[in-house]
Image (cartoon, rainbow, N blue to C red; front, side, top):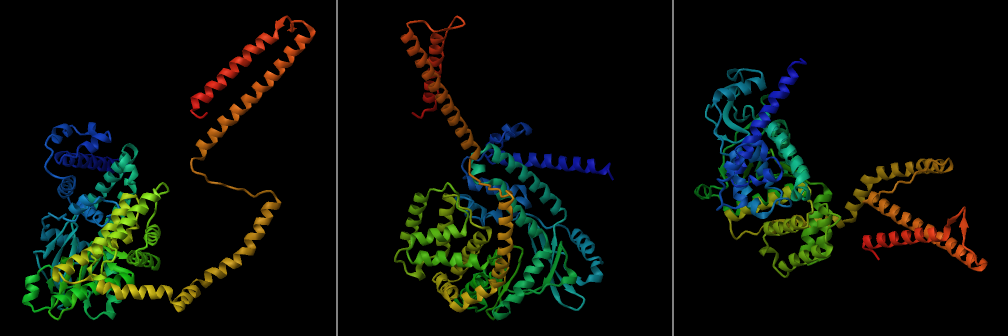
Length: 564
């Protein structure tokens, strides 16, 4: 076994080096090879300069990045799609291109799908299913979906993970982590945007999508929460036919919301459909606090009775009560034309850097407020308001929590779908009752009392701990064991400065003392009309020279410091 580990490490390193070269070549071909050059990695790629000459000058930076991600395959496409949900991190021009990312991946073979299913479910295809269609209904970067029939006649959709995708993604994520670390140490913009943390956050989301058991749990939770809404249907999960790489759900037919022509042929009321879709999303967000993270038209089907079917729960969002309140506070402050209220909401929602320019932030938020001044609520586009918020956050390097940026992406997608169904539809007309209910809950004394009662055990525990903590504090003070630790930014630099100041002060005192002694000797010699000599040495002359040199050095040190 010990002999196998080095070989495994070497083969992994070889895969990484090959992938490094592929990635660098893709960047160079699309005119972004200078990024590797700036990081000092160009010497590892012999074709770097030659390939970089083929850059596409006519294309924007965002378009080049999209082409690179599509060329590099599943990992980068999925990371790009996840990154498109972070407008607080990605500039608008690049964000627009990331939203256009498509999976240009052909389906893998029926034989490979069968091998994965049989390995995961521990049974032959014939014993598991009554029928299994060889041609997949849909194929994407991570997996593909086949239609099948269970032994009891139930029609199901079987999602199968692409073979070898997990190893490839892990290799790519290792490379991206290394590149982000080097970039942060050498490139100022990478350090400012905390590229390493960004990659880590996106990688976590991608690894979650690789585990189909997580998606199965999400689907089951949505199904449970949606029981109060008769207009939404969630496919049931068949646990005995599901695993980390295989997910089997009930097959439900419907019309994609993007197929407007077919919806009209089915005599479905588009306005009613838009209203129901918006209501479902706002209920998930503001009532359940658990919402679909990617409700694009391909993941939502309409049925002839006007009900909606939601699919694909690999990306979901969760909102704590606090996050919901902060988002509601932002909307309320915006409508009340309160600049300070908007700043307070942004500060509560995100991590504001210590060095943020508060005056500039105030000016930007004031401009945001003016944009929506005296505008009727039903004429405001929620997507535009959210984009404006994230633009301010990006400009001032305010990190918005992932759940809130995913919320923004969800609402943007939902509004786009709704407006494509009915251009005259106002999302705020649907949102207003939910926002009002949330606001009333915040100020409702009964709800406040309920929240306080829920927190009561924590308060009781705290009160019980106070006497014990006080006793320990008094005991520590009595025995001289109390330590005070103060954390001050740049404390080392401050202490070095204090040392220099104290040394110069001591030097000045010594110089003053020496000068006083010299004056005493000079006065004594003048009164006695004699030359002051100790062991035949002219002390006054030597002391004068030493004092003069010390004085000149002190003047030089003061001038050199630039502070006089």
